[in-house]
Image (cartoon, helix red, strand yellow):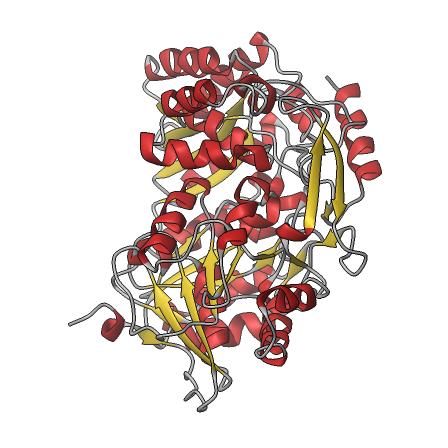
Length: 534
């Protein structure tokens, strides 16, 4: 039995009409990972419910029956290093990797998702067009325009698509540098008909996403996911999930959340509530009351990361009664000094109270997210994190405590986009590991080397394209990237420039022509506020 036949759909696919637009929609990873992506599910279902589209899915390990001559070939990109799988898939379909090498016989290659919306430039050469922002806004406009231009040549099609707000056609923009290894001096559109800037598109409705398919073959087996909120009102200075997705939006409780949950729980008993700050939905308590009804006694409930000071005993009790063992909070640091710098409105007392409430409500574990290398962080701030964890152990002795810790990675469209990675971060992760594990606290550091690669891509420009193509064959280690930089010396800036160097607010950034929700002047103001607290 194929994995596709085991899917339980929560929508009715349309029967494509005779002249339907043939589309391939790919996730550049295995089926079990791709089908767990809510964004991928929703875009696929949106296409599959249209009679004017015939859509087929492709994953790295399995695919549906495919059209002989697809006109659109799309990718949903959630993880930076999946670019390798994008290139592999294009090659397997005999499609040239660079947009400039494709002819009239090739489909238009489009991409979307959080990685490309944040900074598409390192990957720009591989795509004919990139959708910046929310699919609810972009997808209908993309399909309608593609239908209108079916008889046109490739360049004419792309010119018309480039007029759509949020659709970025990289080949129509020229980047100049003061030298091959120097800074960007100009980003210009090559034609008067092409807008000089592309604005990310934001869906502002109050019906958010929910699973369109439930399957035991997903990474989260048989889970039905509901997006409770989108973006985050906290606006921590480093946080892409907040700044890039503004404004904060919440799903209507009676209008969409509860009907959606009821539909999902008809096909599974596993429910996941998603969002960067789920418990800050203004009616979250009402949602909890709804989920604590006796007829939902057999559901398994999980909640993505919640704001620390919203962890009540009631929340913990309901989660524990719904088969949850733990709850996850993002504290970033045990130092109030660091939390002031990043605008994390949180006290140590609130963190300790969250642990007490989690234990009192019957949860077995508390998972915390932390970070090292935050701009302005000092050695004493690392010790403050160790002290905070020790205090949590005393306050809630029966809870299993886990601190997951990453290195600060600068992200586009945030106030901290101008900072580089602190070279002391690796040493600080090792110090935390030594001190916390000796106290019996589970410490799970994210790879410092992965943070270096992530930063390279998150701050990269188009000069990285040949480097990415080289490292694709060398492997995804930092050593591979260093080897590629050595080979390409003189053709692009060194690794240090992209990863560790602090940039000036006056310089042109790789994504300066791609506009997020806030203007640069606002980001600079937030940066100045952060630095007055350091």
